[in-house]
Length: 103
Length: 480
Image (cartoon, rainbow over all chains, first blue to last red; front, side):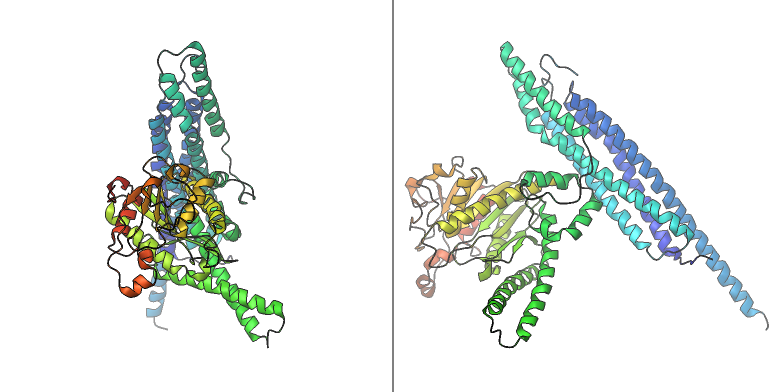
């Protein structure tokens, strides 16, 4: 049996922190397009505008992809924290019940 | 892509610049997100079990991806920023009416060249190596390297290359500070150990051992002085920044007060005779602190002041000669250029820069601007014995950007020992009033008002601070 050490509260905190960072990444991804557009609009007809547009799209896609990964991890940690906590409560209740039975 | 006609006619450098700033700000958001993810991962260090083994690598990978994205975004911003001056020039040329065909072709060529350069920079976004640039690279090269370095490699570089980064011109002040503080702690530990070892040896009869003991004590004295000074200022917000630390020879120390990377106004205070690091840094830092405080009263815009104890200041024997000013001037020119380059590394703006020289420190400034003209926007020379110039034009500053303050009863200010007397009307500088307040007789006998330019409440300090805060035209002037 593998070694197990879990602190549900720590996992829950980590899940919340990941959710916050996911939201930061969502904001960044949302801001990339208008920001690169400002650059491309400032340099009409240039090769720079074309390349900047492509770079902006590539960066936005990459940021979105990490954002999705963080969302998955945040959800997984949050749900693991809840499940571990439930297991602990269940085990504690079982022990309490066992303690009340006559020996 | 348009290659003919006026390619840059509708280019807008200002709009482009605002986009670049926003890109740098987004990169900073990603930096912070990376930092939080790294902390989150570290907080899970005690988590054990199969789930932990699956989750942790994914979290690490995600953090590294965010770090890499910050790097790519910052590089993209830097590539565009590096061409902004060219964009502005191309737009200006394209807007000139009635060009001849040759002029029009030249304007198009300028636009195409800058366009090619920026586009090439944008297509070459790659994570650089974490090894700091080798000797011989310019401060601008170093700034570009740091700009491109992702936050996870920045952190690792700081741990692995502390001594190298501590002295690397072109890094942001915040990074220099982090590296120099690590270096200071390490030096204190090693020097204290060595001092104990040497003290434990009986006699120290071997001259080399004795010489080393003297050297260790001297270096330790400077390091402890710096440690004390930083501790005294620890309550300041922002905290002081240790920008340079070299304990060899006369020692070199630079301490920044305020946000050196972001402040709108940046001043560098250059002290005079007998003020090198071996003789103590606290006094120069105290004067810099007063100057920063007063500048804060003179303007709502942010100001940072660097106490630059960065050259082998002369003692009585050396002070009649300009040799130390010339050597110090070269060091000052390099350090000020490095501060300017470091500000750009994380997307900061160019600051309004003032060099403030007291006594022989003003001679050092005179030497520095000979090495690198237009090193600063304004020069303030207080109690100056001369700046190695016959008149103000030799300093290469725009008209009205050299300010001289000479207190009544300052015997040094009238010496004119190194070129003409800057306080003389014929020199051509702005002669600002520099009263240092009433003097006691003992003070008069001990050198008059030469040491009073930074006294709180003095007109000298007020006027110097006005120049530092970008309010040079508001200084009170001597009667013509």
